[in-house]
Amino acid sequence: MSFVLILHNLTRWAVIALVIYALVRMFMGVFQKRDFTEQDRKSLSWFAISMDVQLLIGLVLFIGNNWWSQFQNMSNAMSQPALRFFVIEHWFLMLIALVLAHLAVSFVRKAQSSASKFKRGAIFTTLAAIAIFFAIPWPWSGVYGRPLFRLAESLMLWFA
Image (tube, rainbow, N blue to C red; front, side, top):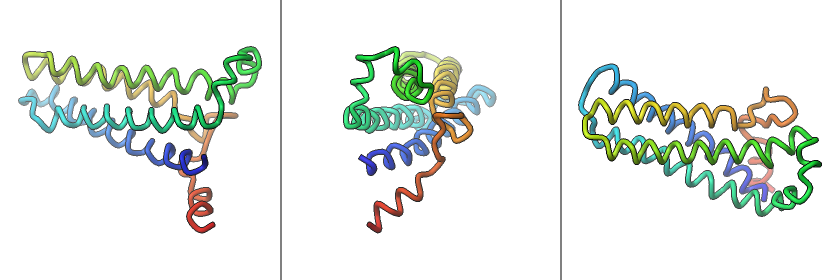
């Protein structure tokens, strides 16, 4: 399971890089009033796909670590901040971000003008980015904080 956790941690950086790339393209389009291109569409699609991959890896962790059993004793999960974060808050916020990422792709596809494509893409991708930011267990997040990179675990896994 540690390999899956390391993979989930590393994939986070792909998601962050792709959401930043999509946001830059959307806001550049909004402010520069340019035509919506295939590359703009792909930036949103790649961001949504990275979220899908991250969800699948997260589900493997969730099921593999038997976190589902925590729903049987919700009072215990809610009384422990770290457990509450991972059992409730993390996956719920990430699910919202995933839906917002796919809504960005869908609403951009349905928009007629470049201006409305960029505006819709910017709004939904920004909302997804905010949800992602609050759902990530950053090192400064208190009791549920996790390292930015799991390098020690990675090295032990590869050289063990």
